[in-house]
Length: 125
Image 1 (cartoon, one colour):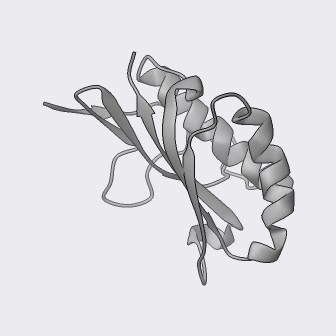
Image 2: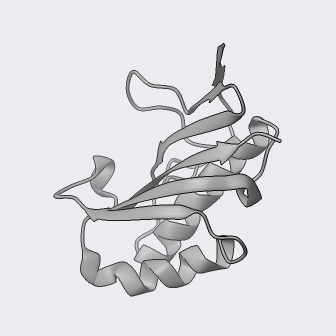
């Protein structure tokens, strides 16, 4: 059975999709932009944007009753892979133990001019 997860602690969906969907023992978190849910602002640097996107993932995981420690896989979308090492440095602070599987891909553009967007699949415990 599918359950929609929504929290005001992460940016609201900007299209016809849910922040996350629970199904069985899995949580599928939609791609998170680095938008502050309280101010709707977006930081400028790849480091700040990576941290903001991951904190949004974290808020959604928490709303579903789990945590990022249970992340199985992430996909990182970047508009400029030359910034990969800088993104990866911040990413590693959040996913340093039992790191999830990950794909990182360069895309031409992201919504709202973001440099990074991250989605995740998280196990529900």
